[in-house]
Length: 387
Image 1: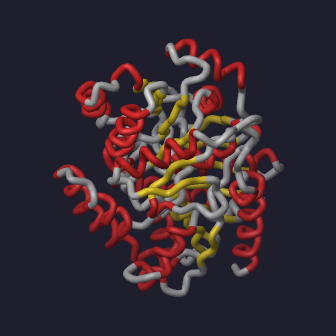
Image 2: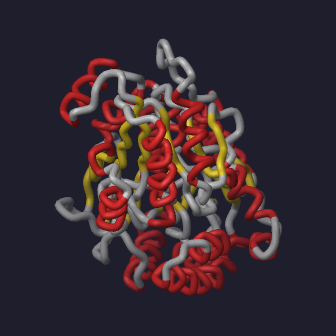
Image 3: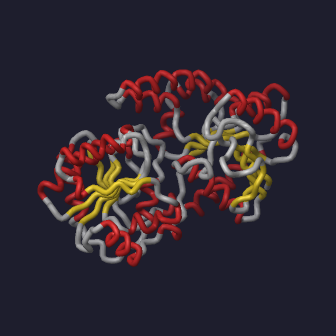
C-alpha cells in the first residue's frame, strides 16, 4: 500500500502530541512494508526531499510548521502533479490536507482522502476561553475562522477521531452539521510501549544529577509549558502537598512561554528548591525522565483529544492524576477538578502512597502503537474499497 501523510509539522519541526503520533504511525507502517511518504512544510537543516526512519519526506518551500497561502497552493499543486494517480490513500493530519481536498473536489480526482482529527475548532474555542488570559481569548477568536474552514469535513472519504472526546465532539453540534455523512472511526492514540520501559539505572542517574534522593516522592508533568496545560494549577496543588509532606519533588518537562511565570510562582510559594524545570526533552531521553518519577500529573484546562503524555507515562509504569474532564478508559488514574489545589494535593498523596514494587507497564492494549497501526490498516483498506 502506498500512503501519503500530509501535515504542516513533524517531529523534525518540533515535538508535540500530534507530531509524535502521526510520525510514529507512519514509521510503524513503513516497518511493516508499506510505502509511506510525508508531505510537509520547510524543515530547517533538511533538503526538499529526504528519507528518515524509512519514510520519504517531501518538504515544500514555504514557512515551516504553519499554515500559509503558499502551503495551500503548493500542496495542491504537488498533489495533482505527483501523487493523485500514484498513491492508494492520502491522510491529512489535522487540517493539513484541506488544500488537497479543494484540489480533489475541483478536478474530480478519486484518490481516497481521510482526516486524522486531534480536536475541533469548537473545542479549541472553549479551551482558550477557559484560561484567564487576553492572549488566549484572542486565540479563541482566530479559531472561529478555523471553524468556518471546516465545511470541508463533509467531503472527506472518512475521519479518524483519536479518542472519545474528539469522537463525541465530531458527532454533536455544531461539528455534526459540518461532518454530514462522512463516516467517523475512532482509533485511540497509540504509543510504543517497549521504547518507554522503566529503567531503574536511568532513574538513579537523573535523580543524582538533580540532587533528588532515592526515597523522595517525585511527580512529573510533561507537556508544552503553556497556561492552557494547567501547569499553574499543578504547581499550586504540588505546593499544598509539599507543605504537608516535605520529601517530595516536582519535574516539569517541556518548553513554552509560561516557564518564567511558573518559576516566579515556585519562588513565591517557597518550593523553588523542589521544582525542577527540565526544558525540552529529546525522545531518546524520555524513558529516563519518566523513570525518575513516581506519578504523572496533568491538570490540563484544555479539551484534550487524547493527550499522548499520560499514555507514555503509563507505558513507563506511572499512575496518573488527570483533570476530571480528561477521563481515559482503562488507564490507572485519579481524576480531580484542576482548579482545586487541595484536591490535587490529596490525589497526589494517595497515589504516591500506593506501592509500586516492579514498575511494570500500566498501558492498556488499546493504547499500544501496534494495536493502533492494525486498526489504521483496516480503516485504510475499508476506505479504499469504498472508492
